[in-house]
Length: 424
Image 1 (cartoon, rainbow, N blue to C red):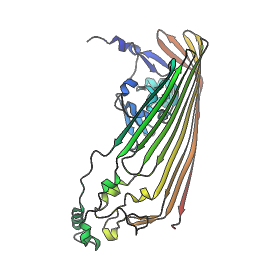
Image 2 (image 1 turned 90 degrees about the vertical axis):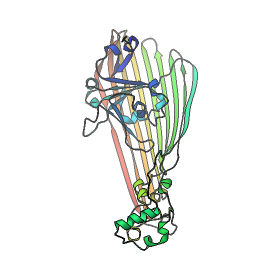
Image 3 (image 1 turned 45 degrees about the horizontal axis):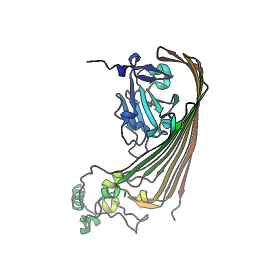
Image 4 (image 1 turned 135 degrees about the horizontal axis):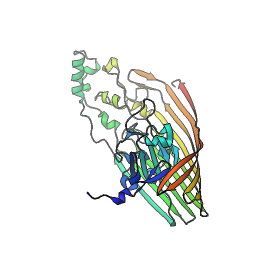
């Protein structure tokens, strides 16, 4: 076998510095934009799913826009197994990572062994995810667009009983002690396919427009992204708006300044159906019942020997909206003291606020009769980070000494309001 010299000479980002792959000691996995391919990822973390060995990308929920956890080397803690994220050299968290549109990421490097702890300390105990975003290149202004539209549906459904088979099952369970309603002939009539009522063909669309350019002294990149995705269950929708601005200036031959701002605004609308309740609903029950409180049919233990909840009652008798605004700003200044020694100071500030609102009308479902209800939660958080460090370059190897000046703080405030309104 012939050695791959080109691969061994590749430069790998490790912590605050860089090193050639042939000189690298430690477990490091890297995925670039070429490795990502044409994957339609809902968030940035899904880009490395199946791309880096020893790294698990776990979805916390099946809903569009749900958070994703990156687990390096398996779960190593009973409390927090989340990896440390470093975006363009500045420490952050999963929230900062998810604020970046997947199309704006150039490469992702995962530090998987104990050497990462020596660089970042105890926060890196669960591994480190280094994220490099796309940068502007010198040249004439360039405008690029990419987007797609897709549809999603269930690839397989359960084979459930029809109404006659359901009545036979209830007869066996109850020892032929059926209620009056279940003894009627219309109880054996199929009225509703509850899987058809719960699922739908979901739409997914994403658009990204990027403007970039610059000269030898100054470069710029502006990226705007819009994503809209429906859940395959009724009646949930996720929308995300992302704006990223990156500017870099060279001041003379020894000084470099840069700033980057990332703004993300997400909106979640609608509630999701109760899948377990829908699978338990009898096939003879209709979807709607204008005589029932809330306008949807119900089954009860006394009448139907079944206390399942109509999966559509709470969905279409409620109004839910969740909004989240997040802003991530980075500023840095770099000075080349000597050809082999550089000093860099960088500041990052993360700010976000959120609001969740859910109003549910009075309704009767299953064995319960519920009144009007409002839940509202809101809050904000802010987290600044300041870092100063020197970088020494020796024989194509970058070695970093952080100055004793690392500052990080986080404030979090949450408020919750709950109202129970009398039925009208």
